[in-house]
Length: 297
Image (cartoon, rainbow, N blue to C red; front, side, top):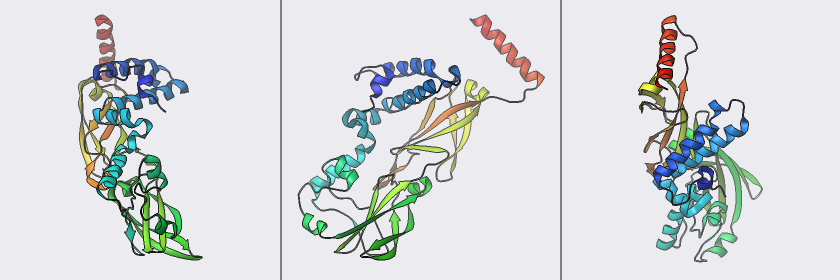
């Protein structure tokens, strides 16, 4: 199990301030800019940044404290438990040529991920008597964000057939779409969300880098960034920002599976962009800045 507290060198009851200070200290020591060519420092910096991203957010920290490495699936676990309390029956798509995200009532995350389990023990004989067939389907991150329809081929009882499968918003790698064309057949489509070139997904949160002119990093400013759905929004960059610092945009991440109106957050990581061609005037100004900083020290 990844121990984010150990990664930052703080205790489990550390305050937000302690977490923030520990992150800054660790990040300075292992920052790639200060350790050029050091792959170990680069990997360590990524671990530190990941730990801080989780522990600096009260919601994700609470989930991590409760579920450990399974914290990304906390909402799904809670939803499955809620459904188990309210109804002993599972929900799945019906009818050839259509599909929906099928969820059974699971007792824990392992059952959820493996597609097993009915805590009430009902309907098992009927499920076990069904002919099951499964295959994998791939969707892009954009398709996982908006939902989509894919056509997949499955061989059932020795015959290959094509099925149109509805992929709901918020699916992630490991999600399963189920179709029951009839009472004797259960079709399972295991979803894989392909990596995106600009966005990294962690649960319902998204992460992306933004190149920002170094003067805006120092003085503050705005940068325009493109969202997964193609929208462009302007992000305010605080003055005195640091390389690797995250700007959090609440509600701009991935939709939650089964509740598409609720979305995770988008974290825009600041990447200062240094100029490659300087005029004499710009060079003189930078030299003056260097002189002033030397005097301040």
